[in-house]
Amino acid sequence: MAYWLLKSEPDAFSWDDLVACGDRGEPWTGVRNHSAKLNLMAMQVGDQAFFYHSQTGKEIVGVCEVITEAYPDASDPKGVFVCVDVRAKVPLPRPFTLAEAKADPALKTMALVTAFRLSVQPVSAAEWAHIMDCVGLTATG
Image (cartoon, rainbow, N blue to C red; front, side, top):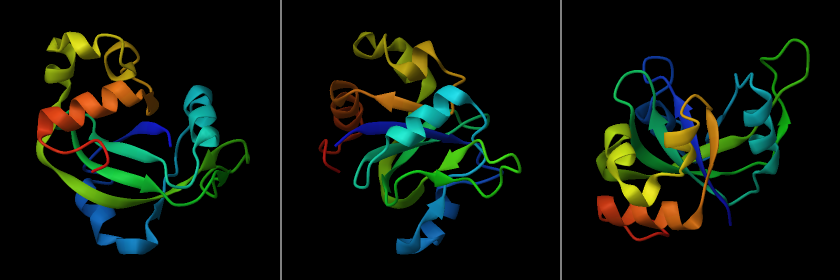
């Protein structure tokens, strides 16, 4: 299993919006960066992802699960980009903020800190476990 971080502006699509989708989940569309596209293409069913509120909040608020592998993003008129479907798994007991990540020496090489503009990011198993521990969850949720 691999771990990821997916960013969304909460006024466009929030954690609560994903939760409202239930088990059917939601396509993660609108990604228009080639590095993020490659990350989407690497995702496998069952992979876990942090759901990150960007712009407003700048915090990880939940864990979601990849429920489909990459397929063409219907919102891309040129047919270049892909999406995956994700569903909400568990909210974090408390948000984990960007400020916390930046201040934490254990996360100094995390993409959230070093490549903060990338909307779909890999998360190492050690980073995943550390953040889950910080918020009071086990690494498996």
